[in-house]
Image (cartoon, rainbow, N blue to C red; front, side, top):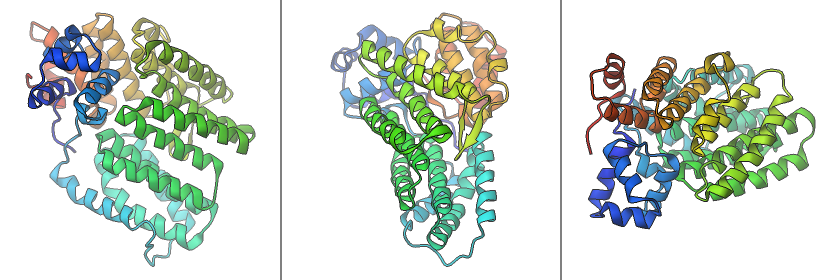
Length: 395
Protein backbone atom coordinates (compact mmCIF):
# COMPACT_ATOMS: atom_id res chain seq x y z
CA UNK A 1 0.00 0.00 0.00
CA UNK A 2 1.28 3.47 -0.83
CA UNK A 3 2.29 5.78 1.99
CA UNK A 4 0.31 8.85 3.04
CA UNK A 5 -0.24 11.51 0.39
CA UNK A 6 -0.48 15.25 0.92
CA UNK A 7 -3.91 16.72 0.14
CA UNK A 8 -4.13 18.49 -3.25
CA UNK A 9 -5.05 21.90 -1.80
CA UNK A 10 -2.03 21.81 0.48
CA UNK A 11 0.12 20.69 -2.44
CA UNK A 12 -1.17 23.62 -4.51
CA UNK A 13 -0.04 26.11 -1.86
CA UNK A 14 3.43 24.58 -1.85
CA UNK A 15 3.65 24.68 -5.65
CA UNK A 16 2.66 28.35 -5.73
CA UNK A 17 5.14 29.30 -3.02
CA UNK A 18 7.95 27.36 -4.72
CA UNK A 19 7.40 29.45 -7.85
CA UNK A 20 7.41 32.72 -5.96
CA UNK A 21 3.89 33.57 -7.11
CA UNK A 22 1.47 35.58 -5.02
CA UNK A 23 -2.13 34.49 -4.60
CA UNK A 24 -3.23 37.57 -6.53
CA UNK A 25 -0.84 36.87 -9.40
CA UNK A 26 -1.77 33.20 -9.70
CA UNK A 27 -5.50 33.84 -9.39
CA UNK A 28 -5.45 36.45 -12.14
CA UNK A 29 -3.40 34.25 -14.44
CA UNK A 30 -5.74 31.31 -13.83
CA UNK A 31 -8.86 33.49 -14.21
CA UNK A 32 -10.28 32.55 -10.82
CA UNK A 33 -11.05 34.81 -7.88
CA UNK A 34 -8.39 35.59 -5.30
CA UNK A 35 -10.97 34.79 -2.64
CA UNK A 36 -11.49 31.28 -4.02
CA UNK A 37 -7.77 30.59 -4.22
CA UNK A 38 -7.29 31.82 -0.66
CA UNK A 39 -10.13 29.63 0.59
CA UNK A 40 -8.68 26.61 -1.21
CA UNK A 41 -5.26 27.12 0.32
CA UNK A 42 -6.49 27.61 3.89
CA UNK A 43 -8.82 24.62 3.65
CA UNK A 44 -12.27 26.17 3.61
CA UNK A 45 -12.96 25.15 -0.01
CA UNK A 46 -11.97 22.04 -1.94
CA UNK A 47 -9.63 22.17 -4.89
CA UNK A 48 -11.83 20.83 -7.68
CA UNK A 49 -10.43 19.14 -10.82
CA UNK A 50 -11.48 22.11 -12.96
CA UNK A 51 -9.76 24.59 -10.63
CA UNK A 52 -6.68 22.37 -10.47
CA UNK A 53 -6.51 22.33 -14.27
CA UNK A 54 -6.83 26.13 -14.52
CA UNK A 55 -4.28 26.77 -11.79
CA UNK A 56 -1.96 24.21 -13.31
CA UNK A 57 -2.03 25.91 -16.69
CA UNK A 58 -1.20 29.20 -15.00
CA UNK A 59 1.88 27.61 -13.41
CA UNK A 60 2.91 25.63 -16.48
CA UNK A 61 1.77 22.36 -14.91
CA UNK A 62 -0.79 19.70 -15.77
CA UNK A 63 -3.76 18.92 -13.57
CA UNK A 64 -2.24 15.68 -12.32
CA UNK A 65 0.90 17.56 -11.25
CA UNK A 66 -1.20 19.98 -9.21
CA UNK A 67 -3.21 17.18 -7.59
CA UNK A 68 0.02 15.32 -6.84
CA UNK A 69 1.15 11.79 -7.61
CA UNK A 70 0.49 9.07 -5.08
CA UNK A 71 3.83 8.04 -3.56
CA UNK A 72 5.20 4.59 -4.30
CA UNK A 73 5.75 2.34 -1.30
CA UNK A 74 9.01 0.41 -1.19
CA UNK A 75 7.12 -2.88 -1.47
CA UNK A 76 5.55 -1.76 -4.76
CA UNK A 77 8.65 -0.26 -6.38
CA UNK A 78 9.97 -3.57 -7.72
CA UNK A 79 6.59 -4.52 -9.18
CA UNK A 80 6.38 -1.18 -10.97
CA UNK A 81 9.87 -1.63 -12.40
CA UNK A 82 8.83 -5.06 -13.65
CA UNK A 83 5.63 -3.60 -15.11
CA UNK A 84 7.54 -0.94 -17.02
CA UNK A 85 9.87 -3.63 -18.35
CA UNK A 86 6.96 -5.76 -19.54
CA UNK A 87 5.49 -2.75 -21.33
CA UNK A 88 8.80 -2.03 -23.06
CA UNK A 89 8.82 -5.61 -24.33
CA UNK A 90 5.39 -5.28 -25.94
CA UNK A 91 6.66 -6.69 -29.25
CA UNK A 92 9.17 -9.14 -27.75
CA UNK A 93 7.01 -12.05 -26.63
CA UNK A 94 8.56 -14.72 -24.47
CA UNK A 95 8.48 -18.37 -25.47
CA UNK A 96 5.69 -19.30 -23.09
CA UNK A 97 2.90 -21.72 -23.98
CA UNK A 98 -0.36 -20.35 -22.63
CA UNK A 99 -3.83 -21.84 -22.85
CA UNK A 100 -6.74 -19.48 -23.64
CA UNK A 101 -8.61 -20.76 -20.57
CA UNK A 102 -5.67 -19.75 -18.38
CA UNK A 103 -5.69 -16.23 -19.80
CA UNK A 104 -9.45 -15.95 -19.27
CA UNK A 105 -9.08 -17.04 -15.64
CA UNK A 106 -6.26 -14.55 -15.08
CA UNK A 107 -8.34 -11.71 -16.49
CA UNK A 108 -11.25 -12.65 -14.25
CA UNK A 109 -8.86 -12.35 -11.31
CA UNK A 110 -7.72 -8.92 -12.51
CA UNK A 111 -11.36 -7.83 -12.75
CA UNK A 112 -12.01 -9.08 -9.22
CA UNK A 113 -9.05 -7.14 -7.81
CA UNK A 114 -9.99 -4.05 -9.80
CA UNK A 115 -13.60 -4.28 -8.65
CA UNK A 116 -12.47 -4.62 -5.04
CA UNK A 117 -9.90 -1.80 -5.44
CA UNK A 118 -7.12 -4.08 -4.20
CA UNK A 119 -4.45 -1.81 -5.63
CA UNK A 120 -1.43 -3.38 -3.96
CA UNK A 121 -2.30 -6.92 -5.04
CA UNK A 122 -3.15 -5.76 -8.55
CA UNK A 123 0.22 -4.03 -8.82
CA UNK A 124 1.90 -7.32 -7.93
CA UNK A 125 0.14 -9.56 -10.44
CA UNK A 126 0.09 -7.28 -13.50
CA UNK A 127 3.79 -7.56 -14.55
CA UNK A 128 3.91 -11.36 -14.98
CA UNK A 129 0.38 -11.39 -16.37
CA UNK A 130 1.25 -8.79 -19.01
CA UNK A 131 4.19 -10.90 -20.19
CA UNK A 132 1.99 -14.01 -20.28
CA UNK A 133 -0.83 -12.36 -22.22
CA UNK A 134 1.66 -10.71 -24.60
CA UNK A 135 3.15 -14.11 -25.42
CA UNK A 136 -0.32 -15.58 -25.91
CA UNK A 137 -1.47 -12.77 -28.23
CA UNK A 138 1.58 -13.08 -30.48
CA UNK A 139 1.34 -16.87 -30.54
CA UNK A 140 -2.41 -17.31 -31.02
CA UNK A 141 -2.95 -14.15 -33.10
CA UNK A 142 -6.72 -14.33 -32.66
CA UNK A 143 -9.18 -11.52 -32.08
CA UNK A 144 -9.82 -12.88 -28.58
CA UNK A 145 -6.12 -13.04 -27.70
CA UNK A 146 -5.43 -9.47 -28.78
CA UNK A 147 -8.59 -8.30 -26.97
CA UNK A 148 -7.24 -9.97 -23.82
CA UNK A 149 -3.97 -8.06 -24.19
CA UNK A 150 -5.85 -4.78 -24.72
CA UNK A 151 -7.88 -5.50 -21.57
CA UNK A 152 -4.69 -6.12 -19.60
CA UNK A 153 -3.27 -2.79 -20.72
CA UNK A 154 -6.59 -1.18 -19.76
CA UNK A 155 -6.09 -2.52 -16.24
CA UNK A 156 -2.57 -1.04 -16.22
CA UNK A 157 -4.02 2.33 -17.27
CA UNK A 158 -6.66 2.14 -14.55
CA UNK A 159 -4.06 1.39 -11.89
CA UNK A 160 -1.74 4.16 -13.09
CA UNK A 161 -4.51 6.75 -13.39
CA UNK A 162 -5.74 6.07 -9.85
CA UNK A 163 -2.25 6.97 -8.58
CA UNK A 164 -1.72 9.76 -11.15
CA UNK A 165 1.38 8.00 -12.48
CA UNK A 166 0.72 9.59 -15.84
CA UNK A 167 3.91 8.53 -17.62
CA UNK A 168 2.85 4.93 -17.04
CA UNK A 169 -0.77 5.69 -17.96
CA UNK A 170 0.18 7.24 -21.30
CA UNK A 171 2.30 4.27 -22.34
CA UNK A 172 -0.46 1.89 -21.24
CA UNK A 173 -3.13 3.50 -23.45
CA UNK A 174 -0.76 3.62 -26.43
CA UNK A 175 -0.06 -0.10 -26.02
CA UNK A 176 -3.77 -0.77 -25.46
CA UNK A 177 -4.68 0.91 -28.73
CA UNK A 178 -1.89 -0.97 -30.53
CA UNK A 179 -3.20 -4.30 -29.22
CA UNK A 180 -6.78 -3.39 -30.15
CA UNK A 181 -5.71 -2.71 -33.74
CA UNK A 182 -3.91 -6.02 -34.34
CA UNK A 183 -7.10 -7.99 -35.02
CA UNK A 184 -9.63 -5.20 -35.10
CA UNK A 185 -12.61 -5.52 -32.77
CA UNK A 186 -14.55 -2.22 -32.84
CA UNK A 187 -15.81 -2.66 -29.26
CA UNK A 188 -12.28 -3.24 -27.94
CA UNK A 189 -11.11 -0.21 -29.93
CA UNK A 190 -13.90 1.91 -28.43
CA UNK A 191 -12.73 0.98 -24.93
CA UNK A 192 -9.17 1.87 -25.93
CA UNK A 193 -10.42 5.28 -27.10
CA UNK A 194 -12.32 5.68 -23.84
CA UNK A 195 -9.11 5.08 -21.88
CA UNK A 196 -7.09 7.36 -24.15
CA UNK A 197 -9.62 10.13 -23.51
CA UNK A 198 -9.12 9.38 -19.83
CA UNK A 199 -5.50 10.51 -20.05
CA UNK A 200 -6.72 13.86 -21.39
CA UNK A 201 -9.06 14.01 -18.40
CA UNK A 202 -6.19 13.25 -16.03
CA UNK A 203 -4.06 15.99 -17.57
CA UNK A 204 -6.93 18.51 -17.46
CA UNK A 205 -7.29 18.79 -21.25
CA UNK A 206 -11.02 18.15 -21.43
CA UNK A 207 -11.43 19.74 -24.85
CA UNK A 208 -8.89 17.34 -26.33
CA UNK A 209 -10.51 14.41 -24.58
CA UNK A 210 -13.91 15.28 -26.02
CA UNK A 211 -12.40 15.39 -29.50
CA UNK A 212 -11.18 11.81 -28.98
CA UNK A 213 -14.62 10.78 -27.68
CA UNK A 214 -16.59 12.40 -30.50
CA UNK A 215 -14.43 10.72 -33.13
CA UNK A 216 -14.67 7.36 -31.35
CA UNK A 217 -18.47 7.58 -31.12
CA UNK A 218 -18.65 8.19 -34.86
CA UNK A 219 -16.45 5.16 -35.55
CA UNK A 220 -18.45 2.91 -33.22
CA UNK A 221 -21.77 3.99 -34.73
CA UNK A 222 -20.43 3.24 -38.19
CA UNK A 223 -18.80 -0.13 -37.44
CA UNK A 224 -21.09 -1.73 -34.85
CA UNK A 225 -24.74 -2.71 -34.63
CA UNK A 226 -27.18 -3.87 -31.99
CA UNK A 227 -26.08 -4.50 -28.40
CA UNK A 228 -22.38 -4.07 -29.11
CA UNK A 229 -23.02 -0.67 -30.64
CA UNK A 230 -25.08 0.39 -27.61
CA UNK A 231 -22.35 -0.78 -25.23
CA UNK A 232 -19.52 0.92 -27.14
CA UNK A 233 -21.27 4.25 -27.60
CA UNK A 234 -22.66 4.13 -24.07
CA UNK A 235 -19.19 3.67 -22.60
CA UNK A 236 -17.93 6.58 -24.69
CA UNK A 237 -20.80 8.88 -23.70
CA UNK A 238 -20.11 8.12 -20.02
CA UNK A 239 -16.53 9.29 -20.49
CA UNK A 240 -17.82 12.23 -22.49
CA UNK A 241 -20.08 13.47 -19.69
CA UNK A 242 -17.17 13.39 -17.23
CA UNK A 243 -14.96 15.38 -19.59
CA UNK A 244 -17.74 17.84 -20.40
CA UNK A 245 -18.48 18.50 -16.74
CA UNK A 246 -14.96 19.86 -16.29
CA UNK A 247 -14.79 22.18 -19.31
CA UNK A 248 -13.61 25.67 -18.30
CA UNK A 249 -16.53 27.42 -20.04
CA UNK A 250 -19.53 26.86 -17.76
CA UNK A 251 -22.18 27.27 -20.44
CA UNK A 252 -20.41 24.91 -22.84
CA UNK A 253 -19.80 22.47 -20.00
CA UNK A 254 -23.51 22.32 -19.21
CA UNK A 255 -24.48 21.97 -22.87
CA UNK A 256 -22.00 19.20 -23.61
CA UNK A 257 -22.60 17.38 -20.33
CA UNK A 258 -26.37 17.39 -20.84
CA UNK A 259 -25.92 15.93 -24.33
CA UNK A 260 -23.74 13.08 -23.11
CA UNK A 261 -25.94 12.46 -20.05
CA UNK A 262 -29.06 12.08 -22.20
CA UNK A 263 -27.39 9.67 -24.61
CA UNK A 264 -25.77 7.66 -21.82
CA UNK A 265 -29.04 7.38 -19.89
CA UNK A 266 -30.89 6.05 -22.92
CA UNK A 267 -28.18 3.61 -23.95
CA UNK A 268 -27.61 2.26 -20.44
CA UNK A 269 -31.34 2.00 -19.75
CA UNK A 270 -31.67 -0.41 -22.67
CA UNK A 271 -30.03 -3.04 -20.44
CA UNK A 272 -31.93 -4.39 -17.40
CA UNK A 273 -28.90 -4.64 -15.14
CA UNK A 274 -25.22 -3.72 -14.89
CA UNK A 275 -22.63 -6.15 -16.21
CA UNK A 276 -18.93 -6.50 -16.98
CA UNK A 277 -17.47 -5.81 -20.40
CA UNK A 278 -13.72 -6.11 -20.97
CA UNK A 279 -12.92 -5.08 -17.42
CA UNK A 280 -15.48 -2.25 -17.16
CA UNK A 281 -18.84 -2.01 -15.42
CA UNK A 282 -21.69 -0.93 -17.70
CA UNK A 283 -25.39 -0.42 -17.11
CA UNK A 284 -28.03 1.90 -15.64
CA UNK A 285 -26.64 2.08 -12.09
CA UNK A 286 -23.16 2.83 -13.37
CA UNK A 287 -24.67 5.63 -15.46
CA UNK A 288 -26.11 7.10 -12.25
CA UNK A 289 -22.66 7.17 -10.64
CA UNK A 290 -21.27 9.11 -13.59
CA UNK A 291 -24.18 11.55 -13.67
CA UNK A 292 -23.86 12.33 -9.97
CA UNK A 293 -20.13 13.04 -10.26
CA UNK A 294 -20.68 15.20 -13.34
CA UNK A 295 -23.36 17.30 -11.63
CA UNK A 296 -20.98 17.89 -8.73
CA UNK A 297 -18.29 19.02 -11.18
CA UNK A 298 -20.86 21.35 -12.76
CA UNK A 299 -21.39 22.91 -9.31
CA UNK A 300 -24.94 21.58 -9.08
CA UNK A 301 -24.70 19.77 -5.74
CA UNK A 302 -28.41 19.95 -4.91
CA UNK A 303 -29.31 18.41 -8.25
CA UNK A 304 -26.68 15.71 -7.70
CA UNK A 305 -28.11 14.83 -4.29
CA UNK A 306 -31.65 14.83 -5.69
CA UNK A 307 -30.81 11.98 -8.09
CA UNK A 308 -31.54 9.52 -5.29
CA UNK A 309 -32.64 9.69 -1.69
CA UNK A 310 -30.68 6.55 -0.81
CA UNK A 311 -27.42 6.15 -2.70
CA UNK A 312 -26.59 2.76 -1.20
CA UNK A 313 -29.91 1.29 -2.33
CA UNK A 314 -29.77 2.93 -5.76
CA UNK A 315 -26.33 1.46 -6.43
CA UNK A 316 -26.82 -1.90 -4.70
CA UNK A 317 -24.85 -4.61 -6.46
CA UNK A 318 -22.19 -2.39 -7.97
CA UNK A 319 -18.57 -3.24 -7.08
CA UNK A 320 -16.47 -1.12 -4.68
CA UNK A 321 -14.64 0.46 -7.61
CA UNK A 322 -17.91 2.18 -8.56
CA UNK A 323 -19.46 2.56 -5.11
CA UNK A 324 -16.57 4.34 -3.38
CA UNK A 325 -16.24 7.17 -5.96
CA UNK A 326 -20.01 7.69 -5.74
CA UNK A 327 -19.89 8.21 -1.99
CA UNK A 328 -16.94 10.58 -2.48
CA UNK A 329 -19.04 12.52 -5.02
CA UNK A 330 -21.92 12.55 -2.53
CA UNK A 331 -19.55 13.87 0.14
CA UNK A 332 -18.45 16.66 -2.19
CA UNK A 333 -22.06 17.60 -2.89
CA UNK A 334 -22.95 17.57 0.80
CA UNK A 335 -19.96 19.72 1.64
CA UNK A 336 -20.88 22.17 -1.13
CA UNK A 337 -24.38 22.50 0.37
CA UNK A 338 -22.95 23.21 3.82
CA UNK A 339 -23.53 19.82 5.44
CA UNK A 340 -20.02 18.95 6.63
CA UNK A 341 -21.32 16.28 9.01
CA UNK A 342 -23.07 14.36 6.24
CA UNK A 343 -20.01 14.77 4.03
CA UNK A 344 -17.87 13.18 6.71
CA UNK A 345 -20.29 10.25 7.01
CA UNK A 346 -20.24 9.71 3.24
CA UNK A 347 -16.46 9.84 3.19
CA UNK A 348 -16.32 7.29 6.00
CA UNK A 349 -18.66 5.06 4.00
CA UNK A 350 -16.39 5.33 0.97
CA UNK A 351 -13.41 4.40 3.13
CA UNK A 352 -15.18 1.34 4.51
CA UNK A 353 -15.93 0.23 0.95
CA UNK A 354 -12.52 0.87 -0.64
CA UNK A 355 -9.85 2.06 1.81
CA UNK A 356 -7.00 1.80 -0.67
CA UNK A 357 -8.81 4.05 -3.14
CA UNK A 358 -9.81 6.68 -0.59
CA UNK A 359 -6.25 7.06 0.70
CA UNK A 360 -5.08 8.30 -2.72
CA UNK A 361 -8.27 9.81 -4.20
CA UNK A 362 -7.68 13.57 -4.59
CA UNK A 363 -11.28 14.56 -3.92
CA UNK A 364 -11.51 12.31 -0.86
CA UNK A 365 -8.37 13.95 0.52
CA UNK A 366 -9.81 17.38 -0.22
CA UNK A 367 -13.14 16.65 1.49
CA UNK A 368 -11.28 15.43 4.55
CA UNK A 369 -9.00 18.49 4.56
CA UNK A 370 -11.91 20.94 4.36
CA UNK A 371 -14.06 19.12 6.91
CA UNK A 372 -11.05 19.06 9.22
CA UNK A 373 -10.57 22.82 8.88
CA UNK A 374 -14.27 23.48 9.55
CA UNK A 375 -14.50 21.40 12.73
CA UNK A 376 -13.66 23.44 15.80
CA UNK A 377 -14.31 20.63 18.28
CA UNK A 378 -13.00 17.10 18.49
CA UNK A 379 -14.94 14.62 16.37
CA UNK A 380 -14.27 10.88 16.83
CA UNK A 381 -15.12 9.97 13.24
CA UNK A 382 -12.95 12.77 11.87
CA UNK A 383 -10.09 11.75 14.14
CA UNK A 384 -10.35 8.15 12.95
CA UNK A 385 -10.35 9.14 9.28
CA UNK A 386 -7.38 11.44 9.81
CA UNK A 387 -5.53 8.49 11.30
CA UNK A 388 -6.36 5.89 8.64
CA UNK A 389 -6.27 8.13 5.56
CA UNK A 390 -3.26 10.21 6.46
CA UNK A 391 -1.93 13.38 8.05
CA UNK A 392 -3.26 16.75 6.97
CA UNK A 393 -0.37 19.22 7.25
CA UNK A 394 -1.12 22.90 7.05
CA UNK A 395 0.09 24.77 3.94
